Length: 91
Image 1 (tube, rainbow, N blue to C red):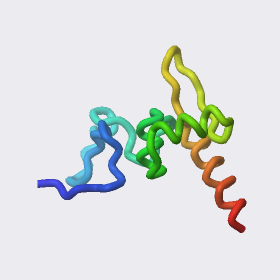
Image 2: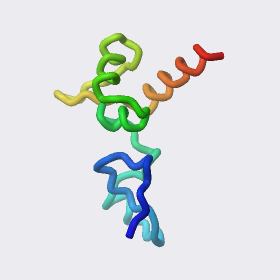
Image 3: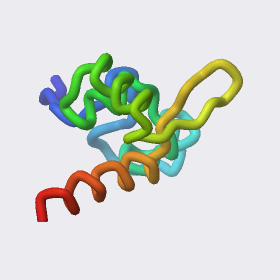
């Protein structure tokens, strides 16, 4: 039985344990932390915020997003920039 990982994003099927065979990335996608973009829901979970608050931050221009077709994604870099802005406000 797997232990509950509070940082695991729903739908992330990255293997948690076991010997590396070299096929994990092909089967499960890149390891967690190496993903390039996240859904708004995934970003909300990672930031411990509600989905609606993340949309408010997007609409206010505080978090930038990209559109791929009709899908809105927040890149890892955009999340990093947002968090750096938050940190600079408290220093």
